[in-house]
Image (tube, rainbow, N blue to C red; front, side, top):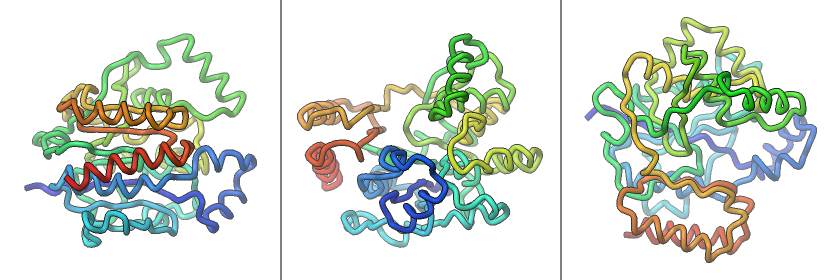
Length: 313
């Protein structure tokens, strides 16, 4: 079977050395609480990949002078399957841009991970597998399976054009969808883009590498920002649109995915009800839960208890 790896980007924003570096470059310390703290989701993300995607050869965790404590899932996760990759490895040709706190800069360089397989699946640490997947859920032959749907690009929506100008003027957090639209524009799609959601994203390394070999200035322009910037595009979405352009893709419905947004606003009972529904729907394979780090301790415990129960089955 052809090798398929997984890549997870992760940092522990509460770690003292990381906080020190972050505060040196960050004008608003409240941002630390919102964006950079975590609720140990990495343990469950890794364990879910091992359990529900057993074909994965290796899981690369890309981080900044850190290593996650996976003791709580050591009965599931073999150390031999995990490899820690420091930012210095992927920024080795652009070391002047470190430290970085920008996921969109980091994402653009994942193809530089040493020994990374040609086909790989990119995860954030709040993305989980909840039922068994097969290689064909991600790749069929030389084609990537893309979970999402087509929508109009931002340059075709007047209200979106205006909203982006407002975001830029007030230095607000750059839009997730606008950065996908920018990626589509770069690949030559000016009227619509294939919108991704929060689940694992299959990537093909040679497609990314070839693009940056031909357009080195695009890479430098992308990775020079220490924090997210509205001038950046979404790197994995750029790969998707390059694949679409070459007809190396298969569309897949978002019905397989559940996104739980603003977990911080859910009571423990509300979360229990949402999670129980996932167990009863056979077609759901992917789960994303956002802002769990901002939820109450009880709500976080509900999620952990539910997931560990699944892992023991």
